[in-house]
Length: 217
Image 1 (cartoon, helix red, strand yellow):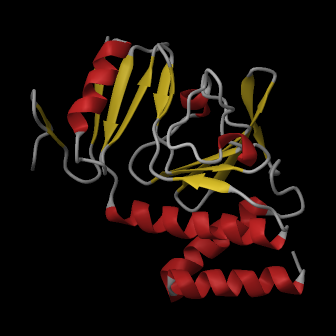
Image 2: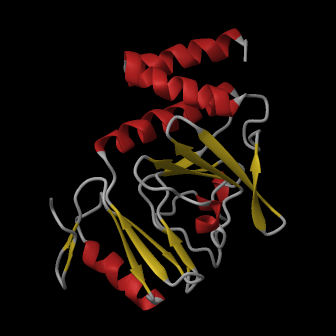
């Protein structure tokens, strides 16, 4: 068993590991982000409410699920004739409050407001219209995004899609999607992500696009 290692120059976690550092400050969080350097596969999250830093090293299947899920979202956006800007990976920070690293985030309604930007600054920029977390070995909670406040948050957990909408300064779980109200998103996303494992990601996406074209959703 490989034990987690954090030194002045190194952050090492085995795939699937999650490390929680308690009673930490925003300065500690920013310091860890700097020290991560080329360890882009590590996800680092901070909450001032709990004073915790969480460091996560996703499993290989995490990337496959993220990739096909994002492709399904893009297929629905194309079907609706909508443009978008997408970011992955990205660190979203509300200074001294919260820092998260969604697996994917989309700007749809607010797309034009962030065109050409490499970094998102919540002092002037809007939150994403859709943020996506794919969980295999750890569990994201809607509260983890409370201060960042994407309009819609998806948490894909063990072939089950949870949808949260930001309403009244907090997240409410929903059975329908704000960005895709005409689709049974909870059913379709789970179905076609699983198809990606069965027949291959690109084949599943083409199958999904044919399904959308037929209009039987």
